[in-house]
Length: 324
Image 1 (tube, rainbow, N blue to C red):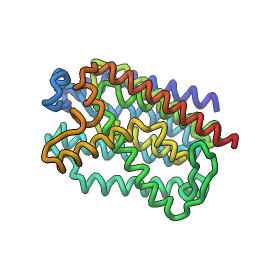
Image 2 (cartoon, rainbow, N blue to C red):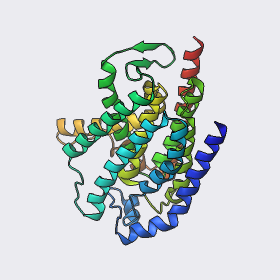
Image 3 (cartoon, one colour):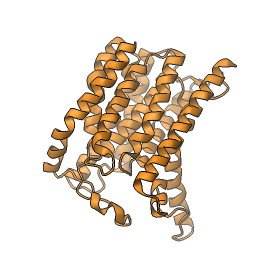
C-alpha cells in the first residue's frame, strides 16, 4: 500500500506539473479567461487570466487513479463522482468563458446534472463497497455507528451537493481552495488507514495533483481552476468521505466550506429582507476579510491554518471515538 501511495502522489504531481506550460497557453489562445467582480479593485489585474485549469487536476488524478482503482476497487465511486462533477463544471466554464454565455448552465440544468451524477455515485458505491454504506453513519467523538436506513439515501444528496457547492464558493482567491482542501484530504487519508477503507492511495494522488496545480495557481496565479476544478474537488471530498464512512466529519474538517456557503446565504437573505443592508462587506466570506484590509496572501494563510487545525480536530474526534 505504501508503494501505491507514493506512485499515486508522484505520478499525479508530475502530470499536473508537466501539463502547465502546455495548458496555460492553449487556454489563452481559446480566450478562456477570468472576469473579475468590479467591486474588488485589487482583483482587476487578474482579468484575462486563463481559467478551466481544473482540467489539469482531473487529468493528474485520473491517470494514476485508474491504475489504483483496478488494485483497490473502493476507489472507483469517488473517482466517478469527481469526474462527473468535473464534467459539469467544464460544461459550465465552457459556456461562460468560451461561448461567452454569462449564465453558463442554467440553475435547473446544473441541479439536474448534479442529482444524476450523485445517483450514479450511489449505485457505484453499492456495488463496490459494503451494502449498508449509505444506511449507517459514524458520529464524531462518539465513534458509534448508527443505522439510519432509507434516510441515508436522502442525506447523500444533501451531503454531496452541499459539499460541492461549498468548495465552489471557496474558490475565489489564488490558491485558496487548494490550500484549504489539502488538509481535508489528508484527514480522509488518515481515516482510510485508521478504519481500513483502502482508499488512502487516491487521497495521496489528489494531494499530489493539488500541489502540482499550486505551482501555477499560487499568488499571483497564472491560471485558475474554474468550476471544472472546484466542482471536481467537491465531488472528490464528498465521495471519499462516504467511502471512508466519515461523511459527518465534513462538518468539522470542511467547516471552511460551510462558512463560505453560510456567508452567502446570510448575506442574500439579509439583503432581501432589509432592502439592501449587508451583514458582510462582501460574500463569500473570504472577500469580507479582503475588503477589511487583509491581503490576499494573508486570507489564504489564515484559512489554510484553520483548515489544518480543523482537520487535526477531525482526526482527534475519530481517534477518541475509536477508543470509547
